[in-house]
Length: 242
Image (cartoon, rainbow, N blue to C red; front, side):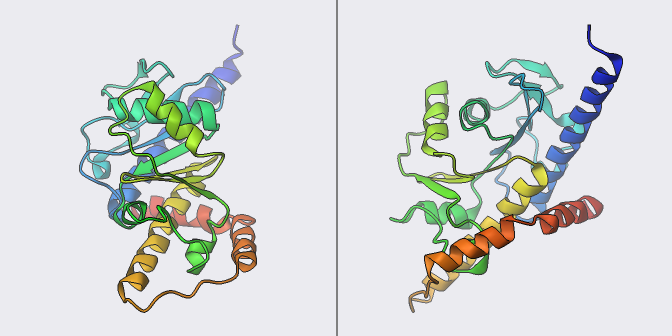
């Protein structure tokens, strides 16, 4: 028998995660990172049950509230919520949660990151801008576009292609950003797009770009990721605004 305090804690945790997930979706819409009613964010419940929360199908991100969030299990069964979910979301997110062991999984087709997934390098150069350096050693590229992820095998292929990275650029497709907390995940998503934007702008001048030494990029990454208060403050500020 579950202790009543355990049940209360679980309920509070799910409520908090629903609110954080809904806020991240509305923030992404506010920052221009959404695309129609496509793309998806998820967060795994911390009880090791394999259950996770996911945004519903058919709602604009800007309108998603906490009670719109759907709870599903790895096979894709809807356990709680009044909406359906998109099949590609279920396959991609279930595999990344299970195989890559990531708690928060944010998938977008945000324009500048997606633009870099179309280039021969397939991804961001993490030795360019300061924002890019925060991702040094944390990115991977999956160059093998196989169409829509409409089965578990494709989701598993993407999860394995991550090779433990926090960020994976999906060739000819988009990007996935992962973290163990939603405020960290959203902060990385936002600054990833900023970094990709300035790289695209710099390269569009035709003047070439000037990288820093990889060792310096590594140090900047360690400085940024070693203290995430700015991430927490940013997400809290978005909560007050949105």
